[in-house]
Image (cartoon, rainbow, N blue to C red):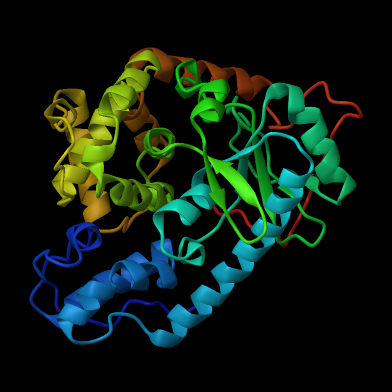
Length: 376
């Protein structure tokens, strides 16, 4: 596949795209259109051309020339619109079962943070149900042809205690990720399923309504998911979602966010995440000063490397050792990092499948060669 990034023989420092994403109307433009187009192309490869084009549209107007190829943007929009239509079809079907459901992550953010939901690329359709409704939800989906996907996992298996391997539709075009907790340990120590249900908002789509997390819970899930991804390339779309939420940072209930982070043992990654955004040039107006301090000590070196990764748009794949070191120094509290290490060590002896246990009849995973494995 041909790269979206234009050829450019200029070896100057690459453009930091993040201030332009966060403040497209007033952030300073870099000198040289080629460098700007190159950065926009790299960004588009990671978040999708249609989303990059939307976020950077004011920048393109100020630049006086398009930043991305219009054909690539159009094809990207058609693909995301198709994915969204499939997810809406099954979201409506789930709502009509009467099982109380909150829609999470990409699907929820697409419908609340963007003027058109198709702009936000879709991966899995993430849904939150109560443990008591898990059997009924799985039975409904399997009756309609869904099967659990079997895909390559780490040697220790899938250590998440919040969700399972995705269920894939019979035609392979829709993946549904069922959560019984909003996010894996330790987040659900404070951000519980019942708390998310109690504070959820209702949004109206074409012909039906869905529940999505309140803005504070949506921001917390951006933080915990980004930390779970070790601030690596898979976290980039959640970072964009968080930046959009921070455009109205003063209206967020920061006491609630800080309280959840402290009670749920993810205060460290919350502070790291906001310090990272500040370093990248995102406005912190309305964000408490206590959450913006750069990490020091062992986390200082990891912080600088993560900032560089984001600025250069992840030019290199990080080895497992680097990601695990990040977990111990910046992505988790020490006790949480040790907890996760224990799960991995146990999984090396008996890898965890990521399939629900104790369901009747027992569930099995099937291989789907044409199913998506995109993270949301």
